[in-house]
Structure formats: C-alpha cells, structure tokens
Length: 78
Length: 197
Image 1 (cartoon, rainbow over the protein chains, first blue to last red):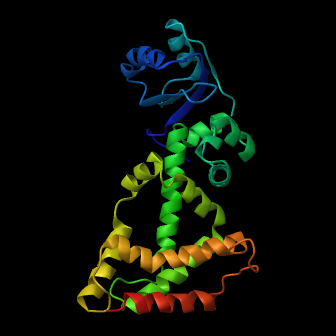
Image 2: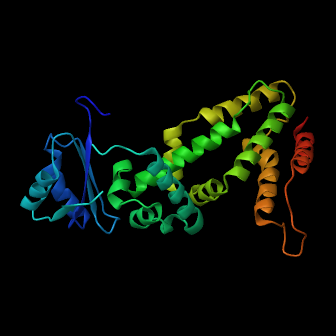
Image 3: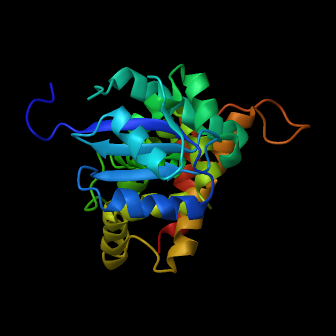
C-alpha cells in the first residue's frame, strides 16, 4: 500500500497556539517551508490541533520548528 | 503513512450524523466525536482537516446518497405520472431507511455547511429533475407554474406523511399512524390530479 513518491504523511499535534494572531505567526514559518504541503490549525478544538501534511517531516522536526517560535506542541497519539 | 481504515471511517461518519441529528451543530466537537466513535482525536484529523471540513464532507456524502436513491430507476423522459410515482417511492424508502440521515439533513439545511456542500456536489440532481418538469410541461402533462409552487404541491404532502409516520401519530389526540405504501400511492394520485392540466 502507498508505494511510490506521493505517499503523504499526516502529522497531528496538540499545540499552545491559541488565537488567530498566533496562526498568522505560524504562517510565516510554515508557508515558506516547502517540505510542508498543507497545514491548518483547528482553533475550535480544545487541543488547538495542528495538522501537517508532508512526506518528509517527522514529528520531532515539527516540534522543533514550532518551539523556535515559542509554541509548545506534542504529537497526538493514534 | 497511517493507513485509512474503511470501518473506522464509517463509524466516525455515523456517529457524527447521530450527534448532529440529536444535538444540532453545536452538539458536535472533535473530542466528543472521537470518544463516541471509539477513535483517538488524532485519527479524526487523519480523515478530516478540522470540524468544518468534517461536517461539510459528511453532508456531501449524505446528500449524494439521498440523490442516488431518489434517482434510482428514474428517467427525465418519463411521463409525469410514472416519474412522480418513482420519486415518491424512492424518497419515502430513503427516508424510512435513513432516519438519522434525514434528521441530520434537517439540522444542517439552513447552515452555511449545506451551501458549501451543495457547491461541491454541483447541479446534476436539479438538472435531471428540472428536465423532467420541463419535458412534461411541454407535453402538456404538467401545469406550468413557479418552481416553488410546483415543488410544494408535488412533495410537501409526501414529507408531511413521513413526518407523521416518524412521530407515530399526527396529533396528540389522534390514533397511532403508520404510513403504508397504499396510502402513499393514494395520496400521490391526488397530487397528480392537482398538477395535471
């Protein structure tokens, strides 16, 4: 299953992102990263879930990226 | 890649439909849904971008299911009587077999989610039904009238009967009510009479 170069990985995190202005700050970070194909934050959810579609990034990469901007995030267990 | 699991996806969809049907749009959160579908919140986000995406996608799927059921064995070239009969039977069967889906659609119909779903679905269903109406007006089998008036006469009696059926009775002081195919077709004949020039 999912053989080939287009297998997409979806990474899901609980984050400390809280407001639309936080999301704007993330935009600067994530929009310019071409390893990220799609991303969004669900601000309506209590976990403020960050969802990232990428075929190269790993969870620790994302945690480091957000950490550099002062956000905490932890991968949600499956 | 975490592989998608058909069975999980179905459970998520069914629970989402039931939650919205019972508690309205405000009754659905990703956390509550995950719990009641027996999956982790992370799993929900594998399938859906966020809560809005989930609601729109479920609405698209349910609407398409209803459309397909409504158009089964139907052809826009049919005579008005035959076409109306099939529509009544198809719509009634779908409603009876999909009580949750019907209640879900009622909750969502007047929300922006419904318009977004309809944009994704396109106009195939209304095109087919519009063609059926135009054909029959041209052939002189159907009275020419504004769409809203036509639809109200053609289908409101059906949906009212189905509502009474689900309620189990029409009004509090009336006998219990069960909608039979016989009564359905009898009512349809009167509708047909009303719409025939």
